[in-house]
Image 1 (cartoon, one colour):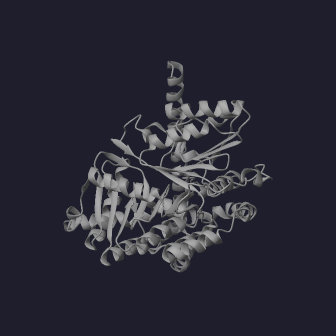
Image 2 (image 1 turned 30 degrees about the horizontal axis):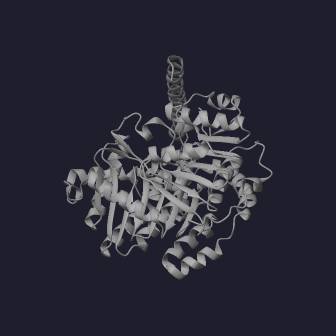
Image 3 (image 1 turned 90 degrees about the vertical axis):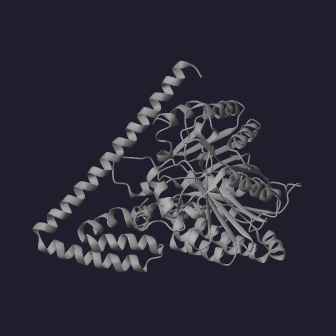
Length: 519
């Protein structure tokens, strides 16, 4: 990369950070003004104060009876009861999140066109039921709730390092003949992306349709606002999801955290890594970065294609929708090398079903011998904590790997606040000593595993658009287990350290956890 490109990239990052700071300050100021107006009214008008208390009481009843996790309910209920005016105002602005009504409608309209084009998956599900009915139950839940079917005719390859995954990805991208779809939470306009962009530009010149979709918040420190225009000037169709603006847009809380690449409808990649230098250890802001991914070849890639088309078409009103979805869902022959079962799936906060959380809970409930998890952030609901603790008390070897070097110190403290209750029930906790582990995976009993974008935290489980892949009875499961064993060797076990923390630390953990649903 020449000096001019480097200077341009540095300017992009600085401008992106400035935009983030400006927008963040603007939102905080708007919130502060609204709160001050409400407080002034409450102080000067008794009727307003009484009205806010009545509103607070109704909101408490509403929150208590809705379907959100108990910990999320408790945080808002305490805030409203302790500070009626402030708590009720803030909940109406941020907690209620009814600014997504139009987006919900938009997604329903697109999904009604897309999902009927997928196979029903009943035959593979019946075959899995004959082999393992408990695993089939998890797959059935995914099919019914997220509408993504199960397949037994697709190969899956596991990559224990993001650098290996991206090299395989570039190789397949260079062979694309018809279309390329790429959807990522974060893209950094630096070496890792430039190598891919060179391939995309070459494929565009060869007549291949290329689309790139990224989340504005995830990429705001990595690219400038003209990034889309620069891609389009090269013939690459590009969109940014949910632009971060200074105004009070409550949909800002819902980010696109998915990582998907689809090539010609029959080759797909997903996993934990974004397209930025730190994910491939070209830079080391938090020690050694550990990330993973999977490659799919065969009909199951249709699920990833559908997830991409859903976001591309539903993300903004006024866009021109695709009218011929079938052209991107070609008839793909079964892969003769396929073994076991695979089920790529996506999670959508617009449908009120916590699919990502339910899959993790199901893995813990499925396990008879062991259930291992790795996550960059451990900020979980009471329901998931109960499932993990119950599995450990049943005698299942439950282990969780978290980072040894944090990327966010506040969140790191929150993560550690969950250790105490888990280890008391027999869950073992490991921290990845070389640096930051960003992978999001689980494996159980040598037969079942997941890999994808879904962190074990409230944001991933309840607010973000996510995706993952469930796989059963294939070599990728053994490869996933082997990688876990390698990570255990590289990690320090902190189970005993958190078994009996001092009283003041337990109090601090309790305070931290009270705010966890808002993180």
